[in-house]
Every structure is written in C-alpha cells, then in structure tokens.
Length: 297
Image 1 (tube, rainbow, N blue to C red):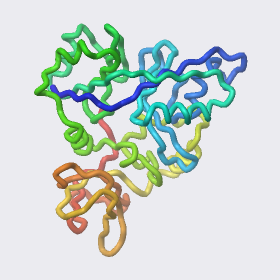
Image 2 (cartoon, helix red, strand yellow; image 1 turned 90 degrees about the horizontal axis):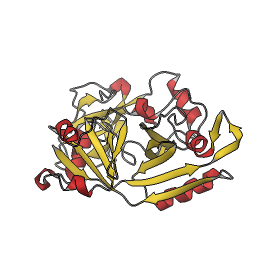
Image 3 (cartoon, helix red, strand yellow; image 1 turned 180 degrees about the vertical axis):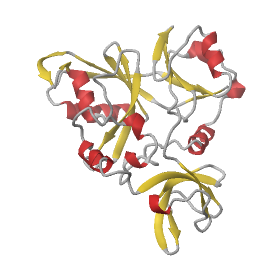
C-alpha cells in the first residue's frame, strides 16, 4: 500500500431553505451548486460524492471539484486556492443566502496492494463514490485520483497517519507520474482552455447530460449530440526531446498536442485527431501507445 499527503483544500457550503422554488429545489446552496457545476447535485444522496467541473461559456474547464453531500451540507474538494475560490463563488451567488467556510484539514490518499485490508482494519467498509465519518475524519472510496482503487482520508487524520508506514509514502512527482501512466486527465493539463472535457475519458463521471442548464452546457450538448469529438486523449511513448505543449507534427501537419510528460521523459498524455489515431503508430518519434477513451473504475 502507498500513501501521500495531497494538497487539496476543503470548503463547507451551507445555505437556508428558500421561500422561492428554484427549479424544484428549496435549498439555496443546493440550487446554487447544481446551477454552476457540471454534474447532478440535486440527486446526490447524503453520504455520496461526485466529480464536477466548472466550465466557461465555450465548455472549457476552469476548475474541478469533488462534491461531498454530508447531510445537505456540501464539502467542496479542490486544488484551487480556497479563498480565491470563495471570492468567485460569492460573486456568483448574487442574493442567495449561502455561506462558505474554509476548512484547514489535511488530506491523505491511500492506494495499491493491501489498501482494502487497511480500510477493514479501521472497521470500515466504504462503497465506491461513497464516504463515511469516523473519529473526526472522512474516508471516501475514490477511484478518480489515479484511475484505480484508492481512498481519500481527510479531516483530523493524525490517528491515521500514525498507522501508516513512512516507507510507503510516495512523492508528489511519483503521484503525478502514476496519474499520467494511468491516463487520468488533470485540470490545467488535459482539462483546460480550448479542450472540451468530452475529448477526455473522465467526462462520463463529471458531466450530467440531463440535469438542465449550467454555464458551458450548450457547448457540451452541441458536441455530444453531433457524435464523437474530432480529437481524442491518448497516452504516448516518447522517443525524442519534447516538452509539454509541443505539437505532434506528422507529414508536415499538426495532428495533436502533448499535455503531460512523466519525469523520465519517456511517456506522456496528449490529444490527437481521431482520424489519425492508430495505436502502435510512430508519429516521428511519438508513438501512440493507447487511446484513453474509457475509464474502467
């Protein structure tokens, strides 16, 4: 089993019952999150969480959030600066009676062999995309960090840290390399301006197609109902000196872009025109190892 302390921030989102019926929702904070995020908050049950994107009007990703429903108080999990995030949210809430609170919690992620046994040793059995609370901390079974079985543990985690073997802790760079090797997109890397989330393999876990309007919904729906987008995310083997954001050029034409490279420079993630995507093909020193179109989590 491996573990890492990850730099994720938590924000409580609380609200009041509304006298208005906001599209069938009478809780202002729930309506607010439902209308600004890409996934379904209204039908998110207590004790469950889901993955959400905040999009611009063109459908590009601005930021992402895991949203936990803790008895209708919502916890936002984000990599963004929490105070800047709250500033943005306050501008969006208008007259809604919603409060935000930054939580100074540590966050552990555990994964790999024997992870399930460790969770059972804590006396817990947590279902996928669910969470539970124990002794001041939350435990959530979250396969979307690395595309594999793993658990988020956040809150007052000192008692859990004392149970972990320091030799099993991995570095942020090792964690990033695993993300890339497992074809997991990341905000500001694969999820960013001019790339639609539909071009990645995580969109089915991040976007509800029937929840109604939110910023960027029209752009997403327009591409989705036309069929598959022209580009696809892929994992590449790299046999040349390149850096992130370099174009994939083949036969004199730009056919893709590299967005993430592991620390040894030998593989990475990026996007390629679907019509040109052929696993095993060498595009002048960049070999398409795998099309990353589905997640099996």
